[in-house]
Amino acid sequence: APDVAFLSVAVDASAAQVRAFAEPYSYPTAVDSANLLGRLFDFDVVPNLLVVDQLGIVQFLHVGGFYLTRPELYQQTKALLAADFAAGERPVFVQQESLELEVIRGQLAQQPDDPDMLAALGDALLREGRAGEAIAAFSRAAELHPEDWAAAFALGTARRQSGDVAGALASWRRALALDPRNFTVRKQIWREEHPERFYPTIDTAWQKEQLAKEGYTP
Image 1 (cartoon, helix red, strand yellow):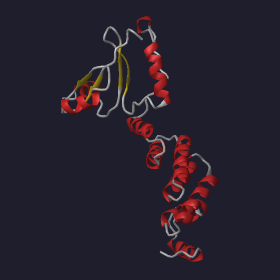
Image 2 (cartoon, one colour; image 1 turned 60 degrees about the horizontal axis):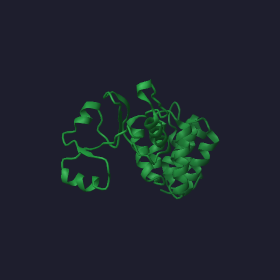
Image 3 (cartoon, one colour; image 1 turned 180 degrees about the horizontal axis):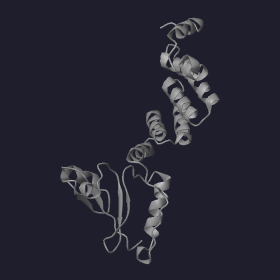
Image 4 (cartoon, one colour; image 1 turned 90 degrees about the vertical axis):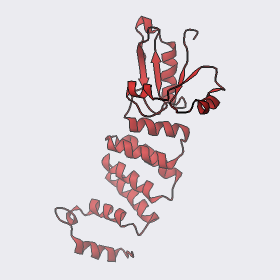
């Protein structure tokens, strides 16, 4: 739109280094070597999006993980560019998530098939009680790295938190098959199938017998 101006701000101590990066772009780039914007808007990560109207009023701020390769943020930006703020329009389609999630999603926008980042996303979602979304992240991580017991184990944990006990046990058994000596995985299966052996007290004698039955070798 003709009444829209773009300005990028680089938080960097060296203007010379920024210049090499900014030269290919037609819009100006300012260097915020003192991190004034970070202090003003209380952020310590980049990239971010700040939309200011003709009167200098901040209409929109998205902190962390702002990449237009994220489809939801691309659509948000298009709507913001088309909005008439003078008429009271302020389109908001994307709910700002926790900073941890925004940063992870931003990194995934650059490397969508990174199993470690997908696992990190799943962990962050679980901490926020969003087990259903965590299952999708862990499932993709396990698909990309099928020999990783940790991905299968995490998927089982997410399924258990969602209430899918059978699915959780299947994932944990998959993790155990990948790493038969993993005592942590084995105990998780036991806790689910034999809770009376763990609560209110742990039956260590039973565990030793069970290990022998299962042919466990450390």
